[in-house]
Image 1 (cartoon, rainbow, N blue to C red):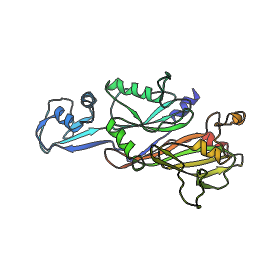
Image 2 (cartoon, helix red, strand yellow):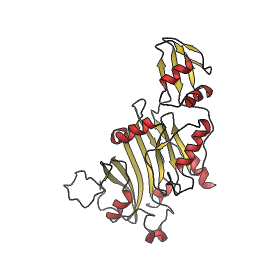
Image 3 (cartoon, helix red, strand yellow):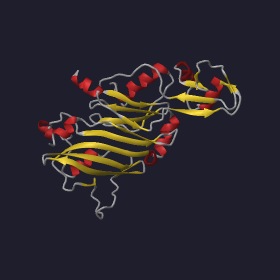
Image 4 (cartoon, rainbow, N blue to C red):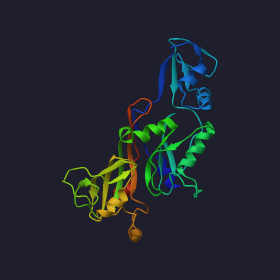
Length: 304
């Protein structure tokens, strides 16, 4: 129970996250057909749910009646903040949700998604079930899966169009993604690239690996160290695949909890990787929104 209460005390920041949108009517119509046309990427049942949950306003007044007339110059407001069944789970918390995105924070020990042969509950399955309680036709698309033992922020698209937008423009849409990492020992350099066997001039970027034709480039900074353990911030500069464990092992500073031979001296009792920060361009507004999930206090305490 202590773990759950600590989890609920965590605070998240979403800078400039859109709370809704406003549109001006250009042609005479009735409200529901107007909304169907405006929100044509959403299912009709999800559009109807906006009226049911009092998320639609007409000229400043909440509208729930589907056949209200709308005329040129009328102002329609659509709120992304809806009153619906709360999602609650000790291993997973929703950080942000609207009709385009869902961002969640998961604890270690929970799979992001599962293969056909895995039947246990996952972040994807739990969030999908939650959304379908409000709209049976809701769909969810996982954009950045985390390993089972990695905690932190995971990103989902709420429709196929948004999913494709991120898949086609990942490096442009995701403006910052960083991980807080605890490793054994101390890197020789305070900061640098997670290098492969390639030999390059100091300061040049290194292509670590290739994922579907896209480069994955990561850079680390040492936050603090006591020689035995070090806490790092790892920034993903390009690509979406995380290769932290493999590259830190290559540097001679394996991530705490990643090597079975070191389990007897793992003071964290878990893998030392936390997806700490995520900034992206909102697919509807184009504005940058940023979210942070505080790293566990134990990450800092073991390097004192």
